[in-house]
Length: 542
Image (cartoon, rainbow, N blue to C red; front, side):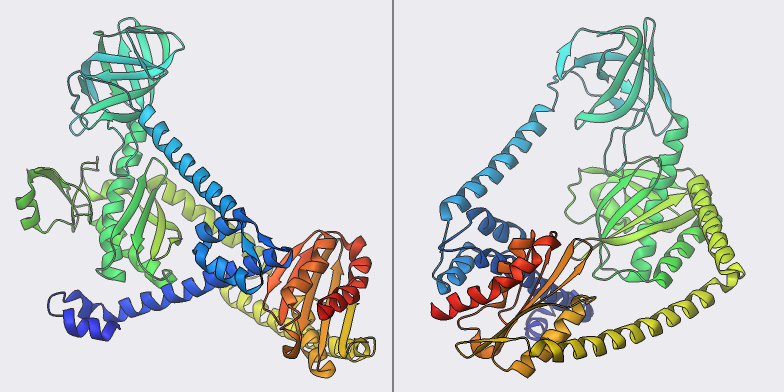
């Protein structure tokens, strides 16, 4: 399909040609994820069917739809094959409940907005961290008031402020508002409207009234740490595009005093080499100590500069273009004056957050130094335990892993031989019910793989059989059920395994010929295994 699309549309959309390999890989990964999701959903569906007589649970049908992408029609078709109906009323009720929850969440967001019709707030935070202003509105518990008293939590709106309101992934500033008769501690700054800033916090002393003159002072330490992390985010974004490819696009970010967290489009985990290369590129920019520059211009002029714009972001007629080292992006956040102010940059985590979206967390300056020192301390501790030099740790660990793998192979081989031996003995215990060999037994010391391997050997030996094997570890029970291919029209391994598992406080699922389950009450296992013959007899007679 893709080659045909590239052939037809490649001239109009040249990215289809240049990115064909990555598109192919992404499609293959999405297909694999889809089939994995379907397989997980089928296991849940089979488990529910195993304990369903005539009506499939509506809540479970909705879970299959909502979590695993199973259309209700697909669930109904599968149930119809088993002469089972679906509780569509229960499904509709679960769907309605979810919609109600979503609407309630939306109403909550709307209710949290403060009603304000005064003048806009003028932001001075790019140039200074202290400014004079006047209170234009006060809020307590979401309601406009004329005065706040000592101990009150509330929101203060000013006509002029140096406080940055949370936007573009950067958290809002903290600090203090000082008036003649009161001191207000600001914990956070949020936008009441696009150009109106609300200072959230607590009145520590005195009173505040609408119209009072105040001195607004931003927390210098918190702002500086946040600026370092935000500027590092820009450099990291550019470095990610250099290392991973131009397909990297920002999907979200959070910049606070402790770290920068950056979500971006990419369809594979970053390798250690790629992470180290991104760190190298960013720190090279930091050590160059280049001066940063912010320019305000119209959107068309900004496009001419080649500034990076976020896909799907809505920009006004006038934008702020930020140059940090070799990075050039549109950004309204606060930033360092020189790249050297970032101090040091280190990536501390990388992982997936959604299909095709990766997340990187990084730290700067003192936090980066603390992180590196903690890694050195950890490495030193490991080296001491292994009685080697820190530089020799990788070699020693690899040697121990090789030794562990060898021992695991030897253990698996021993378990396999034991299982084979036990399997031969167990085969003689099978009973014959209308030509079907039925066996339900405990396999001492067996793990899940051993249960499966023994099951396969018993099925080969008994030819036409329904088998349940179980093992106990403390109070935990592992169960495997198998049905030979000639019997699956009447007997399903998933139903059989859930018949046993339900009696020992568990559940499971799998394919018609092989299924696994777990349980939590080992004391009831003997009775559960004893019930297998009657269950098989009833199914055969039906």
